[in-house]
Length: 140
Image (cartoon, rainbow, N blue to C red; front, side, top):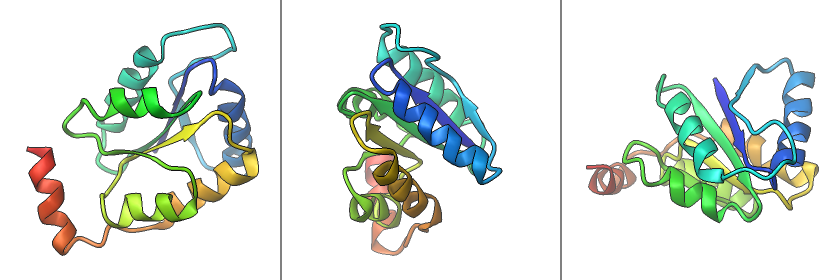
């Protein structure tokens, strides 16, 4: 399942991303926020992380103004590996090398760029190998 979380600065992009998923008949769980009214991003990052961790197959897409706040909060959870990505290459590497289970985006991205990064993130597998030992070191 794909878990969506955002603050007020990520709301518009989240809604555009939901349009993409709906057009592709991909089900998502939206943990908020649900408007452009000012909210505190930690509340939504924590809710999103809880939903991601309900099933090992779940992944998250978290969005705030810069992506920095959401990624900082998400990565406080030792079972979350959130990657703040700016392009497709970073989205690919976050999955291949870091086994990221959350993609964090800036709400300032265009829908086209965000969807391109999401497609890469969702279709890239973790390489394991030498990367697995590294993941274990920071997940303990």
